Length: 65
Image (cartoon, rainbow, N blue to C red; front, side, top):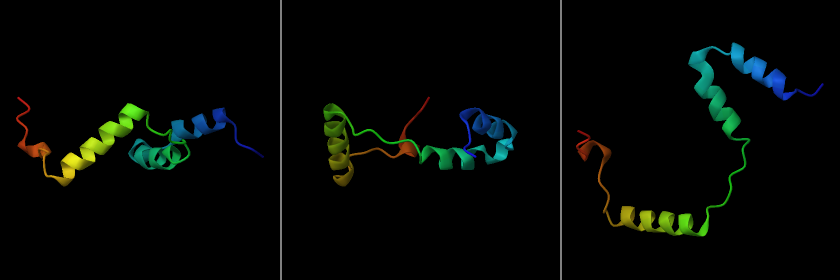
């Protein structure tokens, strides 16, 4: 027997809320990733270069107020 989308939704509805992150991590692996768009690929490459040069700011160093 093959599961239907509705059966999967019903199962999700009865999963303990403390376990939803585990379920999410499992399900997300089945979603295919799309390749980045050209401008996204450029931004990713630039970010990696900035990280390698130490040009980033640590999260805890930011004044969020």
